[in-house]
Length: 247
Figure 1 (tube, rainbow, N blue to C red):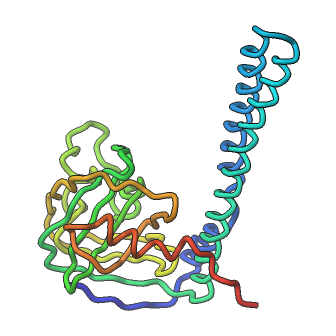
Figure 2: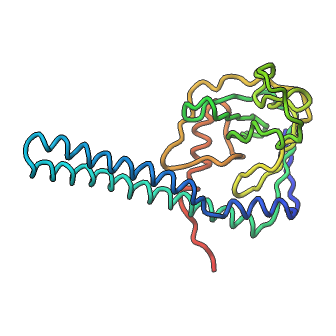
Figure 3: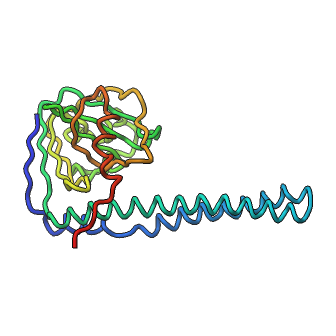
């Protein structure tokens, strides 16, 4: 069972939302650098292979290699531009609403732990919260102690049995909790654990992100735990279309 209420965002929370609307130039630079190095590598390999035949073939090989690299660079740049523009729109809409969504969840009977894209270092949880709704949480932020208002855990591996690596009363997932998030962007502000630790069931199939949609840190959507991937794709597919910005 769950209930939802909203409240005005505080000053610190608005700062978090504003940071989300800024371009991540560092990430762009790293990706462009990697692809750029790959392009130079293809240029060298193409020239090396063509050099076995003639100087003309070497030139052709270099041209083909560099063309392939530039082609992928253009595709990647367009994809990144599209994703950043869409995410900035959703965060800007959240700023316009200046509200935080407060979801109280109780009586959780089942939760599944998934591998997102086959990455074991990227936790993903899907809760059946009743009324045909799924609450999906994903990302390394699930390991951040400040999200739960908890002190730092021991540095050893004694708490690996808990998904978030925290001892009671902060162990998560649990059968009751409160979560504060931005309703548009899905960014999670905090989680207050209120119930007992709920050992998640294995999700089974890997949830593989699709090029046509992406996941927020939190998603509240229609569906069941029997087909989490399908429910997420349906809920997230609208994010692939950047809405027209109103002026």
